[in-house]
Image 1 (cartoon, helix red, strand yellow):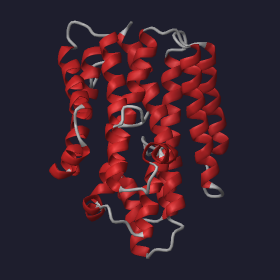
Image 2 (tube, helix red, strand yellow; image 1 turned 90 degrees about the horizontal axis):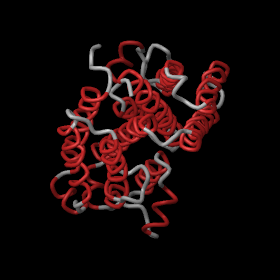
Image 3 (tube, rainbow, N blue to C red; image 1 turned 120 degrees about the vertical axis):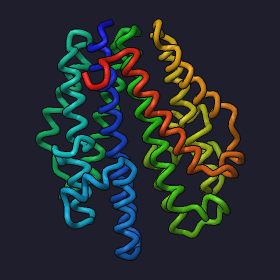
Length: 313
């Protein structure tokens, strides 16, 4: 496969996954903001939302006031923010358009229909949750159509690589921000009612609340949330599950120069596969997640270098 074609497929998947992840985070943030809390706590929560995507500086450059309306507009519908939902879905459609000949008709029409309808729905002032539900539905539809109609060849492999690398990065960022702001809870597992709601909201942001109840059948605790989202191979959005997919798909397209990238992915997978949550918490979850996110960045660069259009090209 031509590297430029692989590049478009990879980034189509990453942008689609990023749009869904952002919709999930913002939807939970809107619901959480309705809890009784001080203006300071509300502001901190919205600033933390920007921090997950490393958008604080970009937001401050465009908005003088940090409030729900400005953050929602910036992260959902601002075309000047390359990580906004609108920008991500537009970029996903443009990447799909560039490789229409590789995609099935159903995949292309799904991406294109999402982009067309987006122009009519790109507003969150009235009912943000309805917009976010629509985004999640369209991203789910895109993934389902892709898996259900694409030939299981290199094209699908690069789509999967983009999906699972983006998903792993998002899960790590969510956990890192939450633990950074709740170190005492991470240590003692003693939650106030409001902290319980926040940890439950985190699970809902990754579609993991019902899964948590099924696996642990107990009250929500930070250590178990971390274990579910980091070390459970049967949790689709966990770091371990995502890295298992990355390793498998890298193996399927390995070439003469990809051994170092494969080695890094395998090392990241093995560290999660044989880890215990008690050891991670004792060593410091911030450090573990920080190192993981650095490695995800390096892994993305390695994939670009070995398979896709070279960085800066």
